[in-house]
Length: 110
Length: 121
Image 1: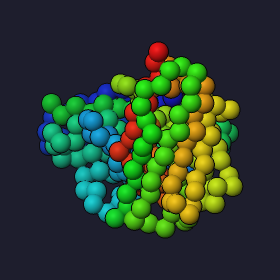
Image 2: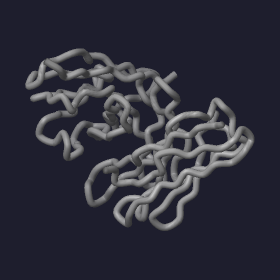
Image 3: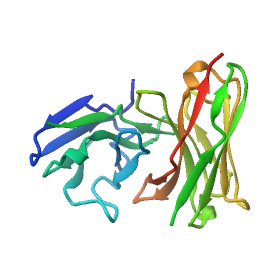
Image 4: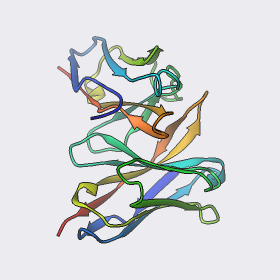
C-alpha cells in the first residue's frame, strides 16, 4: 500500500478536463510541497509540477497543480491522446524520513 | 544538457550482489542530492534511497535498509547503488534522479533512462 493515495485510473474524452487526486497525511503532504510526474508508456518519468503548483519550463499550462491540507490535485485541460500515461504524486514524509510516491493513476483519453 | 546514464543492471541469482552506476553530466554534480527510484514490472514507482550532495547524509526506504548502500564519487560525477542479498522482489527498473531543491522539499527534475535488474535463478 502506498503512503499517498491516488485513484488507479481516470478517463475523459479529448478536449475535456480531468483531475487526479493525491491524498496523504500531516507528515507528508500536510507539511511539505508536492510534485507530479508523468510516465509515458515505456519511458522514464518526467517532472510535470513541483512546489504544488509550479510548472517547469517546457510543460504546457494545460497541466496545473494545487494543494489543500493533506491532499493535492493535478489538473489537465484540453486533453490530448498524447496525454495517455501514468501520473504519480510524490513528496517527503517527515515521519518516515523517506520520499513517498502515490500508487499512480492511469489516464485514458477515450 | 543534463544527462543521467545508468548501467550495471542484468540478471542475477537470488542472494548475489550487483552494483549499479549512474554517470552524470551537463551540470555541477556536487551541487545536487541524488536519488534512486525503482519500478517493478507493471507496478508503480518506489523510492529507494537518497544521498546528499557531499555524500554525508543518506536515507533509505525500509524495504532496502541494511541491504542496499547508496554512494557517490564526486570526482567522477557518478552515483552508485550497491545491492546485496538480492531477492526476486528486487526485480525492477532502477532509475537515478537528480533532486533540485524547491521551496521546502526537493523534487526530481531529471531522470535517467533506467537499468533493468532481474533477480532469478
